[in-house]
Structures are given as C-alpha cells and as structure tokens.
Image (cartoon, rainbow, N blue to C red; front, side, top):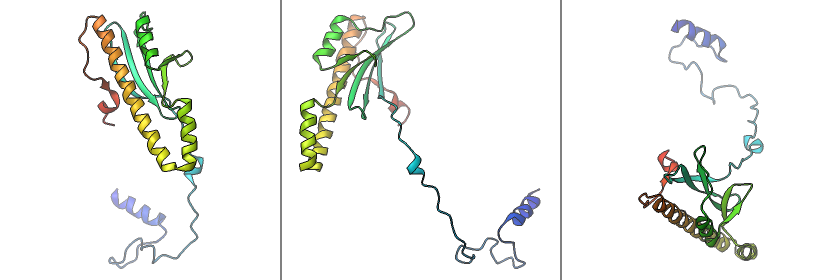
Length: 186
C-alpha cells in the first residue's frame, strides 16, 4: 500500500525519481527550472476587522438569581456594567444602586440595556484632538493613562456595587471578581 502511494506520488510529481538513489527526488529550488510564480492574493486587503462589542466578561453572582457584569469596548471607548437574571427574576437594580451608578458617571442606555461610562469627556476629546496635532506621542500616552484610570475606577465601582448588593442579600462580600478571560487561559 505504501509503495503504491509512493509510486502514485512520483507519477504526479513535477520531477521523476532518477535511477541514482543519492540524487534527491524533488531537487532544491535553485536546481529546478525557473517558472513564473503568481503572487498570492493579498488577504489583508479583503480582511475586515469586525467589532464584537464589549469584552471583559468579569462577573459576580449576586445570589438572588442575578449576575452583575463588567466589560469594556475599546472601539466605542466605553466601559459597561449590566445585570442578567434567571428566568422569572427582574434584572433591574434597586433605586439606590441606580443612584450609585449615576454618582459614579454611569448612564443608562436603553437600547444597550447597560450602564455605560465613556473613557473621555467631550473636553478631553477636544484637548486630545489638538494635542494629537502638536505632539502625537504625548497624546497617545495621556489617552492610555486616562483609559487605564477610568477602567480602574469602573472596576472599583463594579466591586463596590456588587458587594453592597451581596451584603443586602445576606452574603459575604467578594474581594475580587471572577474573570472568564483568565479562566480560559487568555
């Protein structure tokens, strides 16, 4: 069987094996006659990046059939907190929780069904637009610092809110949250 495969491969090959066993069956590229090579299609020209939205699947089960999630979307430059609930359970946070989110710069976005906070205020966006012209490296550095700070503040708000709800539900507060992306090994 293996001999038949080898014979079939040799028949379909561009070169045929010579009688000399020391000569390679498929000679190196420099020994072959040069033939025009067609360029490979440019895959990058046709590939489009598709934004999948919010990432960061940080979540805590609140013990009352609800789960609170924290995520971020770099393309829209926002962080989000949202609630999911088991069937038959109302996912909406209590009034005091909504007030807490508003006090920490989150806004309810109905069509997203999430509490969102932008990385940058309109004033900061205008500042970075001008700074990008004058000093692009400095603008990039300052934007990264603000994104990191807003993300840290968002995670802090997420933990404070989750712990307040857990305590109201008679459960122990969490020191940290579960990160699915780390659990998957990413």
